[in-house]
Length: 619
View 1: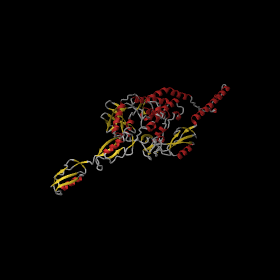
View 2: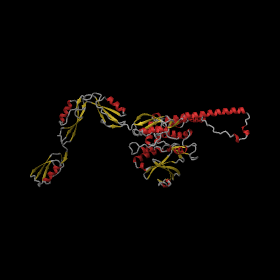
View 3: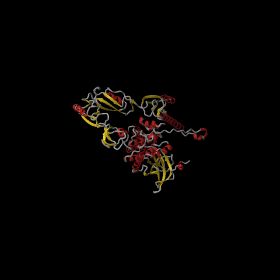
View 4: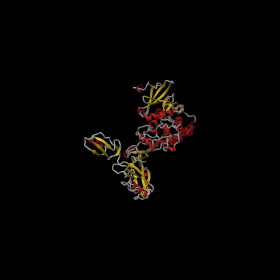
């Protein structure tokens, strides 16, 4: 069945203006349609967000803001945004329609591009990103699928002829990512192109786009991305843990200047990359001559060995084999033979030294030690086990990384360095009370924990030693967790006394004699007599400076409640009602259950402490 025909949106008129003609593509965040703007009579592309994102109010708000920002970004290499709206609750963007194909389509058909063709694509791509960076916008998802090649003429698998390059989807990944319900930080960027900092912290800036652009350039000239695997998380962490190899290590003969551009763009430390796409574009333009010269040099030194076969002497006329100057012809033939032999030797030797003795490294990632050794042995390789490392994504005992990486160049029968995972890094807070604070800080810091110190007086712990640690000893924590050490300042000048149960006046006098300030807070209490201390802060025994403030909480007596009005009621009913409200009852007159209450003191509606006595006059 034709997916376009089956799509219910085909033929629909959006906002009375945009008539959808056909579906162009469907991605992870949105579906793209070709449509006709009936008002301006032009063809446009409409990107409609998937329902799973559209139900989020925060997303819709951010999507609108991003759409307005992108709409103001005018550049010949940026897919223009004309309009935005909603259809049945689904946000959409109306964009410039670029006839042609994506860069992914080109790579699928061609495999890879020549260095010159790659530059023809990379320069306008970087120019578009540079314009966005100047406007304060970060793309966050640079990849071949978001780069459009407007080439109406020529076969899809043919060479690129001055392609019209346009970058799409500015701001969309950010709008989705920052409104995701996944609090762990959903990674929207495609893992093959994701910068290390986006994996580690979820934060991206202009240098993140530079990294992704460098990966795209790597793929353009080699035909593959540098990191691959079945597990997307494992691939993402390869960007964090491994350097991007030089393109010439994958495809020998590529110009060194191209290696330098890709290497600088894909440094794992953002501080070592060009500051933004404009800076990388300047470097690429400055190196273009060297890159093209490097391509010409490689072409000039390429030896094409002839495969012509010597004619069958018996099948040719005799005259064809009668040389006019036999000695000269034999000498020339000998010289030619020597040249051919030397060329063969040089060509084969060069091939062997440059590429022939190398093969591809097998993938040993995410398998156990025994399996890795078996795979390497089958392929004739030796393994060197480097020290194991912690990993949040690879289980303990499985291969975390290898050098060369899977598919990388390695000498046949050579050695592959392998690192096993120690699993997630976790540490148990030790008992540190009484130990030197400096030693404790160094121990915790060595576990990549963030150590904070606070000081307190202690009469039992020497100055500079640890009084206590938070979290409690025995708590299991991750790297980066915050740990607080309470360190002794020695004995305090004053020790707070126990004031509970004393009268407020006595407590204030005692604190004043100790040169401590006092703060009084009133609180109702049914158990502590009015005017006595209920509690204190700091607690008794705490060491404090002279002049420190001690807060005492003083009872104001039982809480007051409203007295029910029982006049006119029978004495038995009135007594029960007052008792239920927490009061004592005294009857005057003839207090029989059937007698009528004529008067009460205190009167109904007044506020009295619980347990107070209410007097009733009855007749």
